[in-house]
Amino acid sequence: MASIEVLAFGDPWPATSFHELLAHPFSRMATAADESGVVVGYCIMLRAADEAEIANIATAPGVRRRGIGARLLDDAIAAGESAGVVAMFLEVRESNTAARGLYASRGFAAVGRRRGYYRHPAEDALVLRRDAAAFE
Image (cartoon, rainbow, N blue to C red; front, top):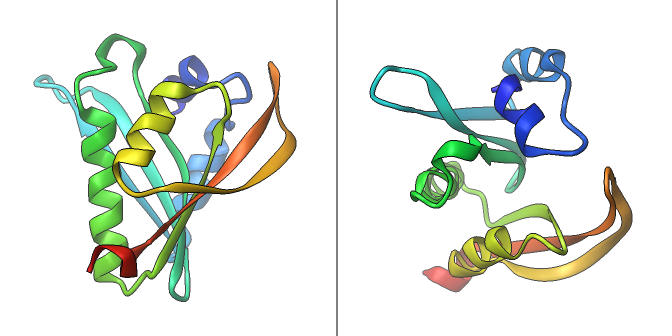
């Protein structure tokens, strides 16, 4: 996951962050692997009470636009709903139109902005929210 992180983000998490999250009961990590077992994508969801956050989701550059991110996101949404999550949040670069399209297709809508959230390159983040009740 850490090797994908470095390729996917200008401000990558250090490898230690992944290890630390594995120890916490409020975190959920899911991976996608290719036919040879190599991890090509991952999704990290953090849950507190009846809310969750997609803290990180990425796919390896060579396998993008093949539905892997969509399947990982769908899995996180289903897991959250099974756990009683009623609202799910995430941040996305304003310029990341591909990700924004994916999130919109799953019912996420902008509810805020974090100015200067990203550093490399500098950019605002849009805060997106998905309410489970809207899909019942």
